[in-house]
Length: 453
Ligand SMILES: [Zn+2]
Image (cartoon, rainbow, N blue to C red; front, side, top):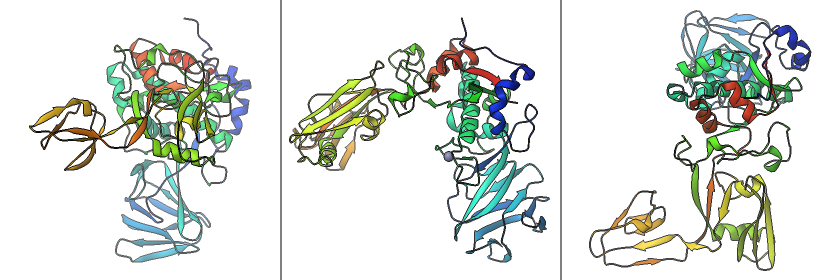
């Protein structure tokens, strides 16, 4: 197979290409030697921070470098309005410190009691004041250890046991590239960290979620990134593309030469021989009432007369969704056509006429009503959504009827924006024997795989 890029291994050859990366990897670590140190903002579930110190852990006061002596135990740190107060669980105060604090754990890991995505972290910790009542908590961690905490949150680690190791490695390269790209772009240039730990950047859960498979995927792709003109790429990924990838310009505003639209036979949810997302073929009812509200926003009377897909891209993803009624029309373009209705993907169709989606059901004898599968049903026990494959049993006076709850039925394929790498597509490609470099060259055509360090 002809590859869309060459794999460069010699660091000397790379220097001209990597020059733009110097601006990215500038955290005091020499290029070509070590995994760069990153600053990751850690989400907390409260304004204060709960941290557990082990024997030998050191907290220093960055303002003057002084060490704060604390015994092993659990402490609460909070912003008292102008400084950081440290107290223990019983409320006993251990002092107030006006500058950022740094925690360097003796064993290389530390424990947080109220972080949102994990509890145990590698590297060190910085604690800064935020406003007059909050704290900003930053995990200083090197890129490779960061990725060990990202992969298990973004992909299914057990795929490695079923022929999917190359997909996990492709994911590691994509995540590494994505992180460097966001750092270079300054996604968080207004924050005292490079990346956050949420979906805004990539979900990062520290050490807790690490698995043998994802650790191996990170190690076996160590330092490797995808680049375009020497810069790390926007390595977008998603769960399932419905059998066709999408150009970023057909979803958002910006196009990239390596994020293009092309058929992907390895991610066709209709192919029973593939492993595809269990909900990659979907159906959603959108109540007429909700569509009416969207139309009212355009100044029309609230009477939807037509819901129509006015144009599609070659992938059949929707370009324009049009809602008309009362002499007015409102259009939703590209990704907005999907998000305004809360649909799983932009690859969808809509049935011409609205249908009643709530049934009132009862029966003279205990009777199973398979026609209620997937619909809303009202009974003496309340209203419930019947699952696909679930049959509804009713016992009562007999008869079925509908109530005037009308909805337009949207049917679609895929989960996510469809841009860049499909995770399920990568999994199927790995199972079919493709290497991670082959997988990446399909999903990010024309990019170069190179060693950032
Ligand atoms: Zn972010």
